[in-house]
Length: 412
Image (cartoon, rainbow, N blue to C red; front, side):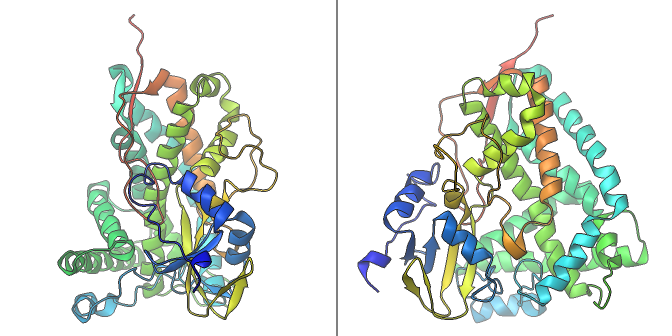
């Protein structure tokens, strides 16, 4: 492999962790398709190539999209037992399996009982959370708002008691670390035990919903039917719930956090949204283009191929950089600038092709309500303190760990 197609970099470490986008711009210019030995994967950074890969499940398979960066040891496999397969049919499969599962999940999301109640519930929870800090004049908005809002919505959406959501979030975080982290064996064993406990919890959740149906997404998934297709079985339901619960809280948290950072850093943007709330949906799209909550996804090459003239061998893993591709969109002028007046267009924040996020509409509703409530009630909001923002080093997901914000509180 020539030096021209190999470049070692780690954008999950300083100085790139806080702002990886200058590195991505360099990759698009100098090495748009490059093997990175630091991760053992090919990185694809230009929009045209990223879009072509994610729309071609024949040459670029999703079956190993959640394969761990580190090969599981025999000891780790023994701990995982029956859960070692890591079946995630909504995310880690190709047609026809993925087509069937996705079709049933979309039917569940389209259920009238689900859609009819979520928007007013989101508005009520958003208002309640802002009530808790509006008069203080300052707050750390990730822990006080961007995290608890999706947690509360996820609890309602899946019929999980709110008292158990902290544990569910920890299980989700542990699974992400096991899949995406480079960790010592002892720590990986602890994470594997956590995954087994989470699978047991989800199986019990499914069986409880089978015995006692209620108007939430778990029941909709169990009852989803399509002509000529078998319903989701318990293993498929558990794997699908792993993906949906994770996306419902973490991806939405990061979407809100990243959007707030971009808006608060743009002079006059907060007041503009306060004065013209009708622009909020478009600004949310621009924020996701500018700093995507999902930075990319892996694919496995099914046959020897070329991407932008670069030979990529069968069996190689490819990481398509959504975060980079969003700053390389056709027709977007000055893409390295966050522009609240930019006309919203298609971007890759929710993916593209067969694996486009099934919960994108609900996430957009949640994000728009969040920005509307915050800009309307927090006058003159601004970033507080001079410390640089910190981010968890995660290959797929990106969002600030903390966001200190101050605002003006009326004296009378």
